[in-house]
Length: 377
Image 1: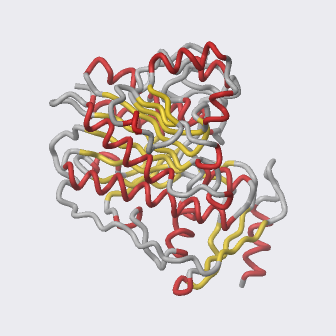
Image 2: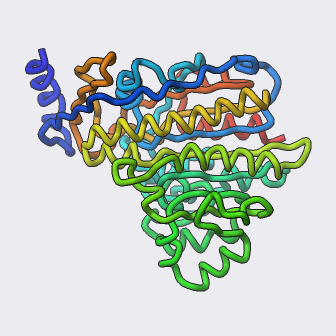
């Protein structure tokens, strides 16, 4: 059966620009980490949410999720949720998007061209969700395992014509409306021009550890740990993403106005990067770590009762197929058919008040439009 599947997949990509040898991968003996089972007390409620947490698993399609599901003894916090939809991800310039164009669509509610970061097809700045919500009294934050200037986190505070304009993206940070950020890294920050570092430190309390005592009293906080702490799990990252997710939630919740809420974007960036490398075991481990961050968000939604959590992806990466394994032993096998992105729609899961608004098929820009409709009041 596997021989025939391999032949089928090879034929399916024979005419693609990114065609390559099929790359097989497997992971064995994954220790089960369990999952969080929601109370569903606020799920699908008709009242408006006060807070929205948007979680983006970079490069995460259905196969990536299910690889983690089977490796984790057939459970995830992801798959404990009831409201589901699909997101189409094409950009304004290409059927297959890149992370910058898709991140910008999620951040602004408008499609743009590949490589654009917070600008439209005419290279003019587009206001992002944090900027549009700030006049309404809603505060915002960003968490990512990518560098802060990465395409997805950058889309929520920067306005640059190309995602590779690293210094310019960091230079946009001091004038942003963000209250909190946590991403990579101390080394990347210290490599920026001195005037940019000083401008950022003037606006934010910048620390290199979530345990720094200065976090407690900061009005605006930036967490930039050493690079190993936001790098791959297989290269030494521990619990940065779930911890930063919870810290961001608590920080924003404590500093929001009494009758106003917050918006938080959380990205699991290295699922995508592992799939670009066709590194199946690493992709599974990154997915499982992202699920721990999802659990933190859903736990808070249950505690708070007025928080909507939306979990999706900017695009699928590598055309992953799950094709074998033994879930009872934590064993999963998969194949990648490309090292690039695909146009396959990505799953969306939602939980909390108005979770039902995100069911069905929608564009990534429509997700942002729906968020703004719920919070911009």
